[in-house]
Image 1 (cartoon, rainbow, N blue to C red):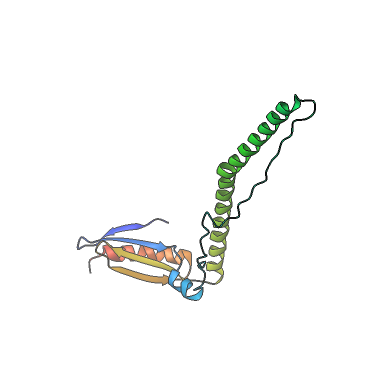
Image 2 (image 1 turned 135 degrees about the horizontal axis):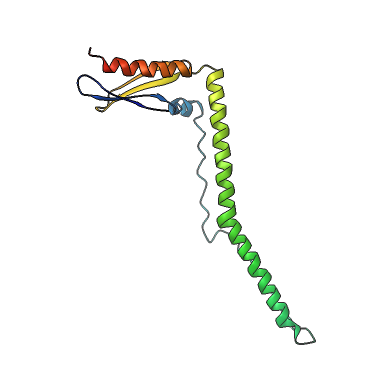
Length: 158
């Protein structure tokens, strides 16, 4: 949303806008335990370590071990390459898309909830000196009209 910048007759610059941010103090008070509790960090020595011991036997024919070893090495390399590609490229891309979808869904739901429950929009005028004036207005169009009216009031000599 566009912020309207106004210079008052006294030379003070004001920014008038409709606030989009949620009221965090109210949410924190209502949903005080929404932050995750810290869990004990797991150190490198805490993880279970185990490995399978591989024993290889040369077949009785004598020449097939090298061919089998090369095939196993190629399959292992392809598996490691696929795992690295998934972990460092595909998974982050999937998570970015999932985050974007969640944000869009939450944005749409919050806009619908704000309209249905008639939650007031906050129109805020902030000066360069730090002085702030806020007005709560029900309705999006009414908030835009109030923003423009506040800007006009600030432009007028008192």
